[in-house]
Image: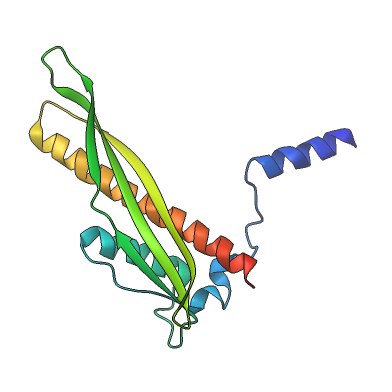
Length: 158
């Protein structure tokens, strides 16, 4: 009996969830969220990521909630110096402010921050590609964080 209880605790600690359990994204409430356009290439990708999760059938006709996102330009820092004073590692910090409104009134306002890193190589092109990839990864992480916050908000306000 104790072994069975221990297994249940271990399964719940590992993040196990039933495969066919309905998630917040599948509810009608999540399908009534309109994500406003976000400027820039990363903004377009972020909006698409959120739209695919919140309303996979397309923008809602009569949204209950509107989400406005302000995506800040990513900051880049260099770390790890070689003997010749060149960097070996770069970090990217991406930030986004967002506001959820209902009937024109602000119901949630928050900010998310995401970090990604890349290796600075001797090849300039390879370093640029790594840097761009880290921008994309940081933006995707922002989307996951925002989505998680929206889902929590919707769950609390059923």
